[in-house]
Image 1 (cartoon, helix red, strand yellow):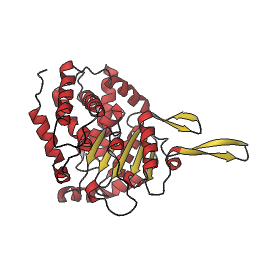
Image 2 (spheres, one colour):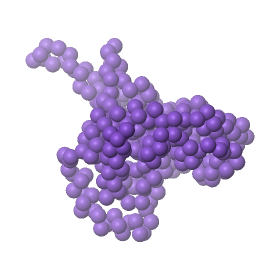
Image 3 (cartoon, one colour):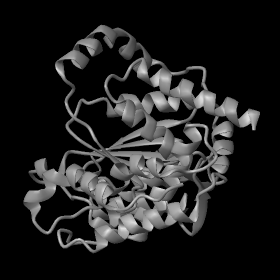
Image 4 (spheres, helix red, strand yellow):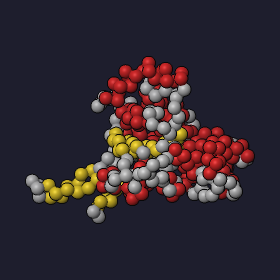
Length: 319
């Protein structure tokens, strides 16, 4: 148990390292730790230039993992992401050229600009943790985390845009909304800009926690105790959403699953070996936001309030 405590301490150091360069997004930093502990991928919506690439890069540096970034375009193919075989004349054999998905942290910029076929191939690999090419199956590195970005759906315009379908969006465990920073935070960024440039250009850095230790913590998260009253609370939340007349598409069981998994990760970060209702409440906005589709599109701006009201009206169990 003491060994686990040290590894959790290292995770806190990872968060501290990222905070040296990222301003005003402590909740995103914590969500990244939750995501990597639960093997759940993140969809980030928001305007460009809000620190998404830097945050992913810093996370990869702090765990000593392989970081790759893909800029999605309308002509990108599944093989550009997954990889392909080529014939080596010198060796006289077919050799696999691995795509960028063979990494620990993969940043997929503007996923909504990739054609549906490429989106599906990427999300299938995310869900299964492996890639199938030419009849052969290859396991992806562990830990493996995809951070995908897209411009807010309400702002999407022009040609070459393929918004994710609800089915594909549901494959993401969590979502996060970024915003342009306020004046105070922007002043702080300008003070740190030289250090930010240095860390972005760095090719190597001593990892704070190893990928091996992260795998140990991933297994430990599964041992966090979840009382049946907590499970019922999660089911009640999702059931309330499904019965809502405001929604056009009911959330799938994946919503319940990621509420459970995310709650366990938060409990671990708080050094508890059991889940309490507040853990469910904390992770709920990130699990539910991208799974809510209103019948009335004009209500899209009220998603956060809708989730807050849901958490208020569903009875909380006493633990």
